[in-house]
Length: 105
Length: 170
Image (cartoon, rainbow over all chains, first blue to last red):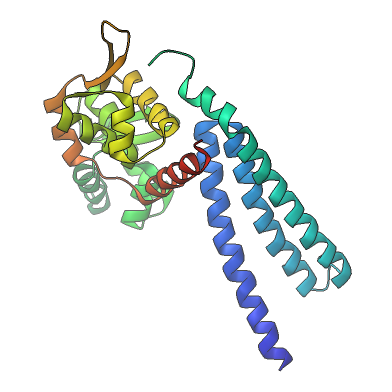
């Protein structure tokens, strides 16, 4: 039973890790092109998903204890929510900069 | 000419504007090998190289400087969509182009910045000082657009920025 649970967990970590690595890569490439605060925040938000997988892997290998892991996961949720909220809040001013608003079009 | 070198040259011919990494991937060769053969092909003027916005593209030698730069930009999915709308409309207001392509204004402005910088698109102001967009050389651009081949990573980054810009649009 424990074996099934472990392999299920390992598979989830591999899928989540691979998927979030791809997303962070895309976000980083987009940030390099745009160099805007919105893209930095979106990249950081996606990076917290990658860190979640990292924390999971460390716990599975006994490096991180379960309580600390639990706290880390929820702290990363706070970070993710925070990054997204700031991105949404600053979207208007960042957009004005990106489209050169103010200049008559 | 060695067999491998002929393959490299044929691939550049088939997909003008291809990136170094894409060449390595498509031909399934070692990066060092591709680099060596590209060096030899360049020294005999069988392949031309163009650096643009931090990326190196390779072309058959028949492409001139403007065509090389144009082709590199047209291999971006969103830029190609914008150019296609302008081919269709002749001249159009930026807001109309953004709406027809289905992208946020910030996405359009970013791609326009490069298209104008490389002289593919011109911004013209009317009597009321409103901006109109038009292609600098429509026929040439249409011909190059047919030859442009977007790469998978480029496509994914374009779609990612499209999504994020749309989500953050007010």
